[in-house]
Image (cartoon, rainbow, N blue to C red; front, side, top):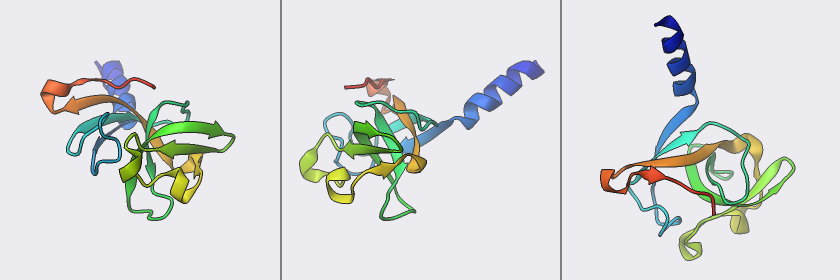
Length: 117
């Protein structure tokens, strides 16, 4: 039983829950949807990532990775007309990446794993 608790504790420390705000990822993600995010800085092109806004440290952004270059990534919203992204603030240092979104759990009728595009 103790071993099982340790496993769950480690896993819980690697998962973030985030709520989508704004329309920058429509149609993939809509405002109010909730996601599970795996804490990692290892991301690939097409992943949806959560990161600290490079211009406002108290804010988190959700975008898709469009390029990976050494110690930084380029990101863009799926809804380019309503997105603040790398075209505006430049590359995002990997140290600002909080993790990769992998599962939408709310609303319940839209529960599913998020795929890389």
